Length: 496
Image 1 (spheres, rainbow, N blue to C red):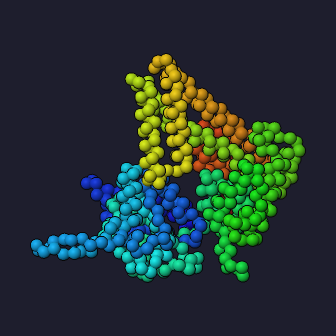
Image 2: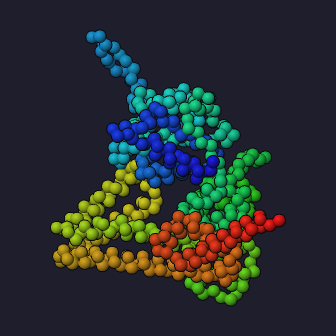
Image 3: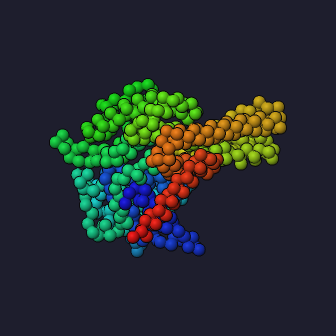
């Protein structure tokens, strides 16, 4: 299965494991909950999907790489404790709490979240001294003398032996205690994730043209050659920051992340061409409706590769603005209930301080639980910043009415800015559709445009929240065309 399919399966499994009966007991007892074992090549996103699941299900997350653990740290250290049996004292061996189990309790104490995911990476690379204890752990969820708390689901991951010399192959007895998911690299699954993460459009356009370059691991005369999903994401981040800093992203830089000479050379050649397209086609001019005759002619005569790159650049800008509009809307919607409570507050400043402290606690708890996505973190920080600025306005106000009016005016300004952004983005999207229709007609490029906006989480949410007439009109045309094609196929089937 690919990573997207694995994510859905793991998410469903965790929700099933955490179901309770009428008395509050887990329907499947902890000892009967098979740990999930993600088995797949390195760098394909196994850790990333576990983090996403914790964020989406609002579960705490504790992660460990088992290669760093000794028997003592995993099981606890022995000590002598005196006990009395039958009236006689005896010295008995006891163990301190496992570092792993202790981390779970510390996370629960710090975050207040009682249910979570214990993620153990490279589970099949444990040391020889620790290996015998793993069978007991996988069956009974016990490290040393201490059990994983109820409400904590165990997810593990590992690489097949061909990728890691340290792998110890599990025997059937061990494997029979795991829920095994074999996962593989898949560009389509990565693309959906990459678009939401803002992976550089040059990378996505390149991989659209060369999906075979997405993931490769092979042995060469010079050693291991590899390109992974993790590598592409890291390259995206570094070249984005290089561009912002006015630095040139050279082939030697890309080669530090992608360890395949052919792929590095091909991508860098494409990246240089992409930069040229970016210069030739003024993206902002196209999206503002100022398309010169020369630009239109150049687009019509372009090769499919060039058209795809141009469409990728245009879509990237539109989706960036859609994402910003949706996130701003989410932030304002989350801020609104607290501001409404100021109307009936005896003291607005005191109420603002309470709201600020509550937001700080929410952030602290979520960070302690390790389940805060970048988007959620940014949203809560924006709310916190607004509340601090509102406190300043309240302190310089003459009375309660003036304080509320000042805060309301500030909020209304941000709402107006958001509406302006939405309107501008709708206009950009309309100009994008107009340009594609004029330059390419109702061909593959239009189908790609509609499909990408539909598949993108930011695009789909923006259209659902704010509407987009150009999208609706063109998607209806394409759906009608698709229905007509199916009818014609059925008619042809009837022909003798």
